Amino acid sequence: MSVFRVTRSAALLLTSCLPAAALAQAEPKGVYVTAYGQVSRIGASTFTESGAQGAGAGVQATFGRGLGGGGDVGYRFGNGWAADVEWNYRTHALTSLRQGSTTLARDGDFASNILMVNGVRRFPSTRDWTPYVGAGLGVVLEVDFDLRPASSGGSRAYSSSGRLAPQLMGGIEYALTPAWRLITDARWLRVGSLSSDNATGNSGGSIRSPRYNPLSVQVGVRYGF
Image (cartoon, rainbow, N blue to C red; front, top):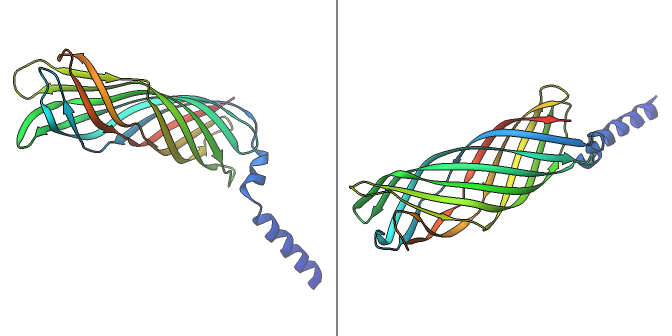
């Protein structure tokens, strides 16, 4: 009897210690689509605004909470790995634009439109919960910086595109039904320091070196086919 108990205990211990990769073998293959909303933050920036209407060097911008949304189309390979193509839009409201003690603007926004390709490692742990981590690389379709001056004068806008941007993520899925899942995750995107040319309001002008590295939290729904 004691041998039976030892054998049974060893089997239970071995089962409990199976790596996530083995548990992931039971995950079905298939296509999925996701839609999500998000809140995000970006840090303050100091930059130079050139051109006849520009403020010059030492311009300091701070931003409030950002809002955005996006979605993806992906494929689960059935072994714990997945890949997806993601589109995302974010906008962050300008809370102040100053040069020394002078207020230059009280209104504006810093917004982005980015296309990503992500690789995702999924770790099924229970029937309903699936934690995951991932990394991706995207191309900046457009980043816009809009300024609406505190004094009289027209708005100014700057735009850039084409930069590559890496992304890290970590989150969890919860199964609502066999097909539908609730998802939430955190994502850190690094675009870095930008050089953007005038789009309107300051012909020939530009801004140099504002940083755009948003940290965001997403909540959404995912459907698996």
